[in-house]
Length: 213
Length: 221
Image (cartoon, rainbow over all chains, first blue to last red; front, side, top):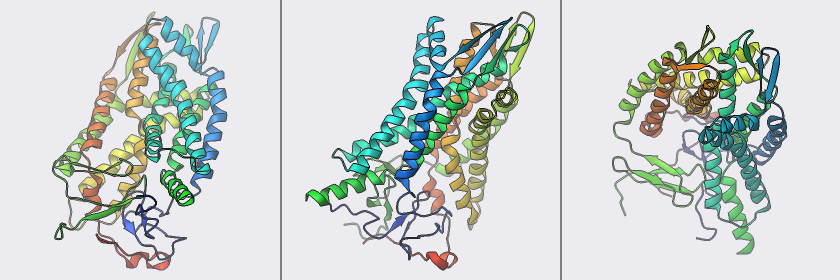
């Protein structure tokens, strides 16, 4: 079915992004709001590529201090000790719980990096119209959406450690600046995934087919 | 060629392919033939079961937020924390932005989701369904990705194991309640069929006629 896929956009229809009501807008440029759920209608998410790029770049910048700066400081009777994300993974590993160390490593280091790489790949392939399986790319996009929230793990670990270890003057734990960058990476990549429109993957395929017959 | 059955036409949200969703058998699923997205499911007794689960979730949510997550005791000192106290301590230690994000993902988003869902599920029992139900369900949909019970649960466990190296920790009732919330939210996601709500909401063409007049496409071409 080369180039013959019957899509809503081809049929001049707009599908509500929330309740999936199919509508024929009077003005295609400004479809207005969904009469059923009130969501703003759009053929494709507004400025999807630009917004996603902006959020991905912002997240990539925050990713550096998130990993280099300490996320918490432990004060024990005069001496203080700062830990980065990776330091926390090493601490878990040396204290004997390697499965947990692996979970934190995957959630805190590999998932955010994987999301940034995946979204960059999707953006470039859509913009350049590079050949490849649209189905696999859509699957990759869905996976980004599914795993994204898990990188918030370390923020919760730090929060509850800080809240509990306040045994002045014996021992106390304080959050360090890295944690806010880390939380920012998670929020920015989640917003980036939400602003990317997977239908653009399929639009790019249609354009490719038109060009090469 | 089934002619008498009216089929619902939808565009796949992930690839925009127009297609008709056939009537599904109980527990059946309809997938998009082009991109594989699950477009529709047919859970048994969706609205009643989801309401029961959501009411339970509301009660468990209150327990999870009121009861301590864990207690520690070290050299005569005892301390415990609740979820919101975690965010409060972050705020007091100068991490206001992180505190706000934690409070939103751990308390506000799940609370809003439960509240919106409860209101929607109770409101659709009345006939006719009030038009604001659609608006509320849309907001529930927005809250879902940000309500991170399962991530928080794992975070609590990792913190528990980390702290166990330094002091004696005991899990509190709050932690078990968070575990209950994880299960309940997963059950709601499986049982809830939003199409059952959307199809009950009537909408008025004339209300959108200025600037955005629309017509409904029914079935076929």
